[in-house]
Amino acid sequence: MSDLGYAAIFMAIIAVASAASETAARLKWIGKSTGRKILHITAGVLVSFLPWFVKNQIYLLVIGALVLATLYYLVAWNKLEGINDPSKRNWGMVYFPVSFLLLVLFFIPDKREIFAISFLLMTFSDPFAAITGTRIKSRKYNLTRDEKSTAGSVAFLISTLFLTSLFLYYEAHWLGREFTPLFIFSFLLIIPVTATLLEAIPSGGLDNITVPLGSAFLINIALTTPEIQILTGFFAAVAIGFIAFKYRMLTLDGAIGTVVLGTFIFVYGGLQWSLPVLMFFFSSSLLSKIRIQHNRKVEERFEKSGTRGIFQVLANGGIGGAVLLLESYFNTGWLYLVYVLSFAAAAADTWGTEVGTMWRTRTISLRNFNEVPQGVSGGVSLPGTLGALLGAAMVVITTYYWTADLVIFVSLVGLGFVGSMIDSLMGEFLQVRYRCVKCGLITERKNHCEQKTAMDKGYSFITNDIVNFCSTATSLLLFILIYNTRL
Image (tube, rainbow, N blue to C red; front, top):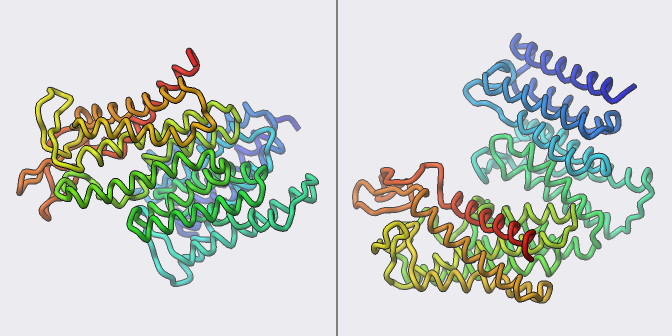
């Protein structure tokens, strides 16, 4: 049978499964949750093995796009009221084809087995965790918005461990790969644990993206990495997350996010990729602690204190993590420079803020160059400007052994500094600010003096984390443009 024939059969089965689940749920034969699980498992199994039947990557992308468009319409316009609560739209089913499209782009046709196992992990482990979490009473927890249970997370871990073991069996007995006992142990440690954390962190169904995508890239990395590096990288990430949480550098969700990010960085890149993020993280955390001791009053203007959470971890390290994943797949060499710049820009912004507010000093607005209260978003000072430049330099200098080129060094430091200036400009013109209705303080916080603050200026959806993310992304785009035209 041709690819088009198999594609038509796949689409027909998905349509029938969707209609059957929706009809059964509307007739009260099954619950909404059960209907979603039936559709989830049916689609997941079909998707996992589809590339063995439809081998043309373009056809697979078209299938993914059609399913994505259809599901988006059905969820957005509440056409699946049987299995989807209209008052709480479940976007997880929409994110499923998003994962499919991304994994087809990266892992088809050459790595179909990685494509398959990444979807099977989500297909079976997620509903198994949900069923276990509802039937076994256990401690509940929230890392972000959605409530999870320890029983559900343990069930997810066990299911993932079983499926990952089957994957190694397939690799060894069908593809002829040889694995040492130490590699098997290390592989069966980091994949299930990391996948479980990737399921525990997100909210709103985003685990349908984080689990398949993250698992696929980590499996791809681990299969070509020495077992000693896998173990040392994973335990280093866990140790850093634990220390950061214990000494209140990070919240619990921030520490777990750091463990996940650190696992990818340390396992893939070793010392070369680890030094920039370690310099950024520990220097920034230390400066934050010192600044709080010297000038605690300015804390009231910041949205978050010196203890960073998951969204700050993502804002500062998410782009670097994404660049690392791309480099692990494409092996370009030059993406390492982009990775370094991402942390140089993050360090420049953080050092600029911490040094600039460590002592009471004159701060001006980039809008009109008038003096503004210290700590107001968008304000700049001489100590802060010098701190931003030094922060970028400190990160880049840790990589000079591998990038011993003066032009590249200056470019990375300069663009890291430019990133902090873009951050200040966005903070002045776009970032949301609030005013305390009781004391009149301008702050990034939504609550002050035990009352809700009033919006003063900016756009409500542009928070400090969004500004950090966008300023870093802009500096990276500038570097890519310069690198491909001059360096």
